[in-house]
Image (cartoon, rainbow, N blue to C red):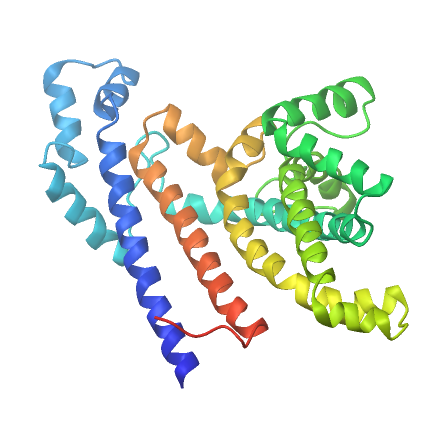
Length: 322
C-alpha cells in the first residue's frame, strides 16, 4: 500500500511537471522573434498587411498570449495539436508517422551504449590501476569530450564517402513499407553509434566508480578472506550492489537520448521527430514544434518516473518519501 501511494504521488508530480514544461515551451516559442503569419503570407506571394492579419486571425495568433496558452492546453488534453503551418497536415498524425524511426534509433542506441559502457566499466573497475583500466578511462574521457555532430560527420566521411561501406542518410524504406532487416540495419548503424558514444562514456565512468566503491566494502573483503574466487565475488557480491546506480542512470539517460537525438537525426537525415522538430524550428512552424516538444517532454518525464520507481524496486532499503 505504501508503494502504491508513492507511485501515485510520483504520477501526480510528473503530471504537474509536464503541464509546467508544456506551458513554458509554449511561452518561450511564442516569444521567439519572427512571425509565422508573415512567412506563410510571403510564400504565397501575398505578403500585404491585410493578408497577414487574416492569417493571424485564422491561426489565433492575434489573440492575447495567455488566451492562446489556455486554448492550447485545452486542445492538448483532447489530443488536438493543431495543423502544421507549412505542411498543412495534422500535427499528431505526422508525429505518429515519424515516431517509430526515433524509437528505433534511440532504443538501439540505449541498448548498445548500456551493454558496451557497463561491460567496459566493470572490466576497468575490477582491475583498478592496471593498463586496461587506464586505457578504458582514456577512451571514456575522449568519447565524453568529442562533440556528437563531429563524430557523426567523421563517420559519414570515412564509412560512407571514402569506404562506401554504409549509407549516409535515411532509413532505407518509406513510411508504410516493411523494411528489409539488413537494409534497415545498414542505415541504422552509423546514427546509432554516433548517438551512443557519449552515453557509453557516461556508463563506463559510472560503472567503474560503482564497482571500485563496492569492492572496498567490508562484505567484499570478508568474501576475499574466505578464499572465494575473484570471478565469483565479482558476480555474486559486487555486481548486484554496483548495478543500482547504473539502473537509475540508465532510465534517466533514456530520456536524454530522446531529446539528444535531434542533432543526430539532422546529420543523418533520419526521418524521426527530432529532425521534424529541427525543420519546424527553422520554418517557424509553431504548432509542429510544440507538438514535438510535447511528445519529447512526455517521454522524458515518464522515463524519469520509471527511474524513480525502478530504483525503489531494485533496492528495498530506500525509504519511500513523498
